[in-house]
Amino acid sequence: MICIIPSVKTPYKNQFEFSVDIKLINLLKKIYKIETKILSEKSILSGKCKLLVISGGNSVLKLSKRKNDLIRHNLDKFYFTQALKRKIPIIGICHGAQFISSYFSSSLKKINNHVGDHDIIYKGKIYRVNSFHKIGIIRLGKNLIKTSEAMDKSIESFKHKSLNIKGIVWHPERHKFIKKIDKLVLDI
Image 1 (cartoon, rainbow, N blue to C red):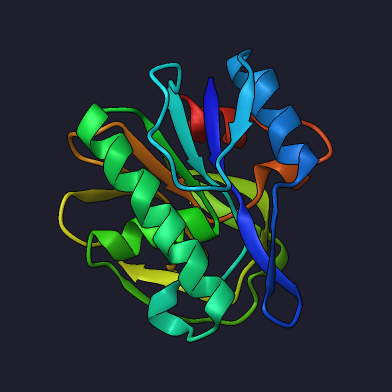
Image 2: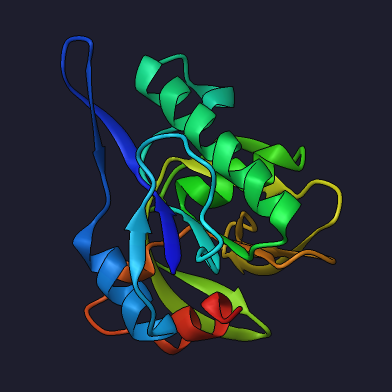
């Protein structure tokens, strides 16, 4: 089972809504060929959870003071630490990658020109991806290795040196078809 941490939105005053893009669920089912579960409340990860996905949406708490971002941070941290203890593979997408990189003391800052399609470099080849973020990973923290970068040298994907953890800051679920770069980077 793939366990997905959803984004947290504030549709009304003091009410919160959890959501996951159905395109992400469909992408994960196509790549990994197993069922998914959305983790909207704190509970112990089931032994059936074979992969934790920290989805896009929200801002990293380090750069935001909104209540929905605090709720999201607490949910991410709760499940992330469980997955680490149980050695469950982890993938962070956009916000998820920013959360993981922040957890490992990476440097993040506001950047421009990362909304829409742009080119990245992965293993010496150029690939076209999409992004919907204004926060960039500028320097990776301890034990994280860059696997791709944008033309402005901001980090687009990374992996952990020894743990089964990967992060990408683009949205593979928003490509019309699964791209080669998505398969290369998401393969766990």
